[in-house]
Image (cartoon, rainbow, N blue to C red; front, side):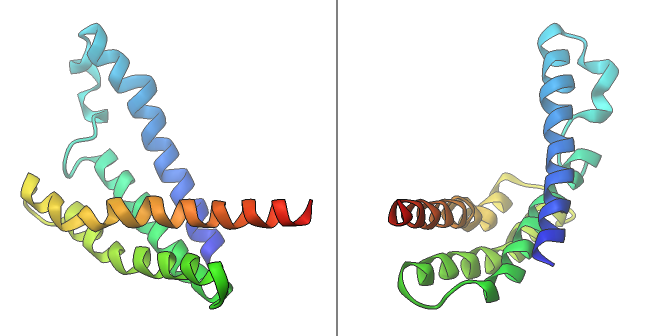
Length: 135
């Protein structure tokens, strides 16, 4: 399940970023963004929803990966970071899909800005430790 949700994340977020970076931003810089306005990522737009599906899938991927993580040693901290990120996923879902967008609503999703990098960095540290140990 974790792998499936990771693939969903990769597909939706990559599609969004490619469109934003290769089409929308160059069009805005050249002053021709009106022609591709439908592709802009604004609250409750198509690509806003792509972003939402991607990041919610990331949270579900971490949720389903938790049982594969050890409860001992440094791996315990990796596990805790995955649990924290999975618990924050509903908050980010509210931010994306609440009927009325506001900047204040973004503060509800602020914990995600901590849990997302944390759950990505800690497994990398673990893998690095294992690599150094095996050398």
